[in-house]
Image 1 (cartoon, rainbow over the protein chains, first blue to last red):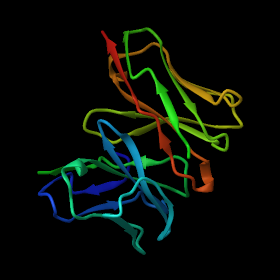
Image 2: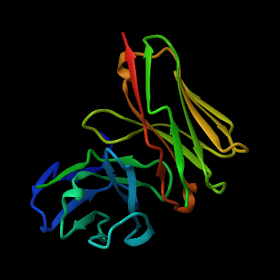
Image 3: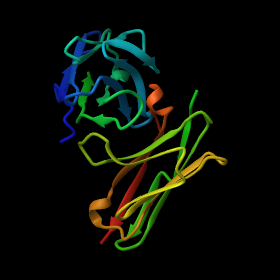
Length: 112
Length: 113
């Protein structure tokens, strides 16, 4: 158990809908990262937050947004969902930034 | 931006043999290189990491080597066991400067008993 908690584990929804994925980092970790994993794209970095502020942005679509709350948990919001958004979404956390990331078990999103 | 290439994409070895996975990175400013193991249905798990001021690091049957000049780093697993079967990912970042971690495409390792 990495100590990073992601909910829900599975999410099935329809095209055009909006979903929210939640992540609780390890105790003491200030940085939270979101990654998307698919068969053709591998592990793609989406966005990083450090102590509530956005630190780095990767290949995140404009339909996607995220935030980190004062209690350090984070949410990833995916809107106007398309079939191609179906993937495994991972959250990871680290003490500061860029090193020793610990990953949660992921949220499997299926868009039908 | 940073790009990480990983080879091979699949690797099959006999139990007890060694396995080597290689990665190259593009950004010479990268200074932190972790390796992750991902088992089916689980998130990636950090197994070993190395910083750019170190050429080699070993932890029991696992070792990582880094060639900064060539921008290459490799994972070596000795005395492989069936439980080593998984997908392995290399990654690179600018370490504690807050840089994002960029992953290679992964290597599916199969250890045959």
